[in-house]
Length: 268
View 1 (cartoon, one colour):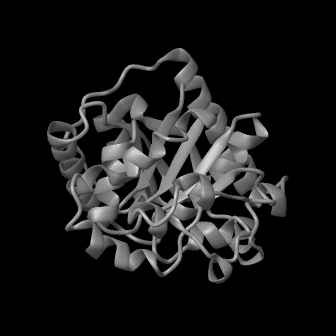
View 2 (cartoon, rainbow, N blue to C red):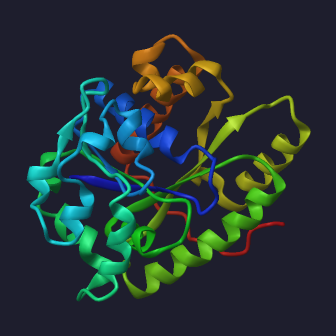
């Protein structure tokens, strides 16, 4: 059964796109069929997958505004070996157009259902804000993978995000859950990192992934070459971490891990 995950956090620079691209490539390495949905007008996930956003004739913008069928807009990441529903700056206009469309919160979910059976995993790279595009992602997915740095302000942002997730769970998507919390740019030598990590474990228990994504130069360099780090440097710490994350996600699904109740009261 297809799993649809939104990679989300309203804070920018916390590794959402890096996670989306590298988790997609790592899942493919385990023989899974993967679709990456770029829902960010910046198009970074598209470019990081080796697809030139400036040369695209049709994108997710055309899908959401009923200008094209989703099957006609999919492209293959030659580097990552997964499919991409790409984005570029045109997507900025989609949010305005969607406001006047019926069922505007469910547009993405409706189009993904047309092709969902072709994939084992669909990963949605959300923009760094809680806007109509992110709302569509949360209404369409089974679970949210929250990427965050272990710092004080990240906890404040996490509290707001969980409040939004709870609201969408109640109003739009009763199957929505926190799939997992992924600690990115992780440095265990930092005492604040360890303090925040401990608080996450206290409040979210097994929803916190055991895998942490370290600060890694090769991981930071890979997007400039339009490659997942698994292609750029398979032996790097970043590549090994994302392979471990893919394995952890697959094991959770195979074990049918029960959902931890969502809690909007995060320690500050």
